[in-house]
Amino acid sequence: MSAPPRAYLPDLLFAGGEVLEGAALSVVDGAVVGVGEPEIGCQWVRLRGRAILPGLVSAHSHSFQRAIRGRTEARLPGKGDFWAWREAMYRVAAIVDPEDVYAIARQAFHEMARAGVTAVGEFHYLQRDPNGRSYEDPDLLAKQVMRAAREVGIRIVLLRCAYARGGHGEPPGPAQRRFVDEASDDALQSVERLEAFVAGDAAAGVGLAPHSVRACPADWIAPLATAARLRGWPLHVHLAEQPAEVEQCRAEHGVTPPVLLERLEALHRGTTVVHAIHLTVEDVLCLGRAQATVCACPTTERDLGDGIVPADRLLEAGCSLALGSDSNVQIDLLEEARALEGHLRLERLTRGVLAAGAGSGNDDLARRLYGAASAGGMRSLGLSGGALAVGEQADFLVVDLEESSIAGASDEDLLSTVVFSAARTAVREVFVAGEPVILGGASANSHPPGDEIAREFRATMKKLWAR
Image 1 (spheres, rainbow, N blue to C red):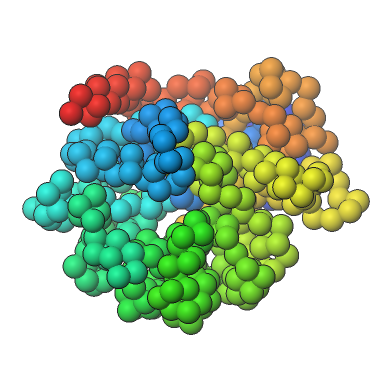
Image 2 (cartoon, rainbow, N blue to C red):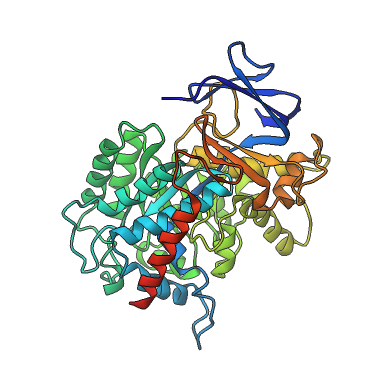
């Protein structure tokens, strides 16, 4: 049963791309029906000292990696790169059971909700049991992740990964046996089953995710890309995260990863490439021609020493931007947004790298960054919305304008203050389709309490690390 029609009246409202003072957000049956004067028949909800903004989106997450937070920071002799981190991640991937997957995902998704995230794209590649055998229900682990998100109350698009090999000329290693499919059709059929599984839930969806050009041969990527396009599913691919991946692609195919995807007809508006760091000039133009989305994950890319996404050049070429929490070393989409700009400032030795141009207004840069964290993520996941325009789903967050990190913000600098300075504690309420998920900084009554989620997570962690 949906909530009764309500008109939310905050001090400030960011909707339809504009910051409005004294305007109401009217919500009926989970959708925005008015911005401005409260709609007739709506119950008024006055939110003094508050601002409403569109919900944030983590378009790329590996929820099970929340289990290794804080445990991979030691630098081993000769092992300080991404590949050493991957070994640690593989050790956890090898031992988690279905209930572990659920408990870890629920913790990660609850943290997302507390940080204002209303939708997540879960790039899911744990498929098999620890021995590499299929579960009786081959989609069990994917369902556990979806169950966790929906219990917490956020939207989820399960991006079911296809994984074939360890790399060019390399069979899957022992650590990868939980990831692999025997054929590309296995991944396709899994997505079809999962689509049927969530058919009655408007806040759950599916997509296809060939893991990377390293883990999938060309004769897997091409048919999966075609299937996703024909069925209207989002297509996500890791791309050019590491120089070694680019070198392997050149050795196998004679071209870089973006050019290979273009040749395979896997690049188009429905494609999201994740990371896209180590790019040539032609790679950037290739992605721009396709009008693909690039999902940057700056806190993970920083943590792993991956490099910096050339977001300014990608935008100029015609790409869209989305943001993801990826390894969930930190779950804060506003930090992802500010880091996207901040990393480029350090590299280019100038400010406002992603600003629309000289003379743009005070909030224009923040508007672009917030858009990547909201509407850009929704586009990446094949969902409409992200701007609180009339007709969109009422997915929004409420910040406390008196919280110390954003105290003093006005309509003229709201977005800049939120994007560049807001602490996660500024987020007080979160709504998905007009239904409360977080109220007063805690779980709404219809969702599991945060202390219960954390208690189960702590028990899971204790068990995992004792093995």
